[in-house]
Image (cartoon, rainbow, N blue to C red; front, side, top):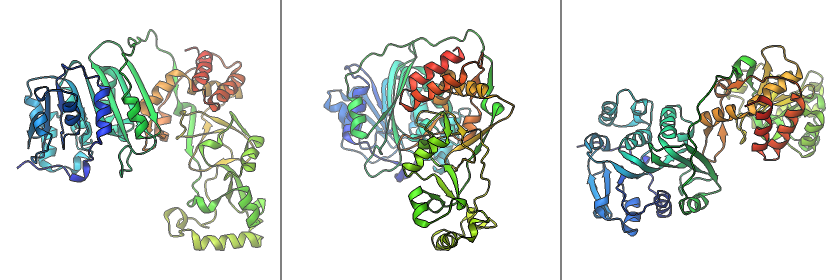
Length: 482
């Protein structure tokens, strides 16, 4: 008997989402459909209601238990999809699925062996991959030329390293690729984030890709249900000459901001500082989140606006003078009862209430979770530091202010934005995330000149903060000459 994957890895597709995914594939009546993991038949039901005859639908499932929609398709149960697909004679013009999400290493050894035998060279089928990736990769091989597919995938589609080759395959193999994500979980009762991948016109000319973020599942479904429009595609651009670049890691040293160990205790607003009667000698000015980066230059005036807005821009960090204050002693005593002093970050300090490695000499700050991608806010306030929700940078070589801004403009340019879209990881709410290794690997086009960089960067960041990303990139491209 063929072993089954864990039941917990299956989340069934709601009818309205199934209907929208079918609509997104533009069914016109003569397609041959495949559902490689039919389950209870959510997609088959929609196809039946749209008048697609059972002879044009094939459903496969490893689970031998039948479903009420089995008779609406040529349904094959109790068979491993990967065994079946290796001997499948036909090709399909439409493939639609909500595959199971489970690490391959967690599957029964017999299922692991089937995946390894399916393709020993493709990392998609290795123990470090996930079942959904194997389903998608094997399904693409069953598409006819000009065919299209729609898959519900986990948010890991956009950031998992094991899926990188698969993402590249999809983007290179289809004329049109759309990734739809939600700011809220897509399935009721499931907190993990999901995306809907729509890839159309397999092995056809042109390349067009789009990534859309929707407020919630109904908004995503409305978008998928829009009448299908043929998107004008652009031929792939050929590189005519190699532009000299430098990696971010060669130009800058990137470090995570200081780790408090308990942000609720250590980070304070101005009103909290006043209420607690903590002297200025007991606190350190900091920026602690991406939205605090509100200018190309983080000056005292910009930081003061954050202070007046009652943002958490103080970090408790008493010096020797402050330790003589009763209010400071009281706050330390309060911390003993509210902080986990046995936690890893606090127990290894000489004094648990003294945050180590506070860098007050950073050149600038950068967020790995900015919705517009990486950009630099230069420090222009003495003694300002950042906490570990932000990154700090210093230059690896001597640079004047104009040269610093020139490279910062390069970071905003289209070639770097393209790299960003390839490596960014997105989580359940659509929030992007770049690890230090991701940023360090970015290749920045070398600016042809540094003249006027300060003014250009100020203008670019102003547009960026106004929500005009295209305007900011246009300024950067013009300066860099790309």
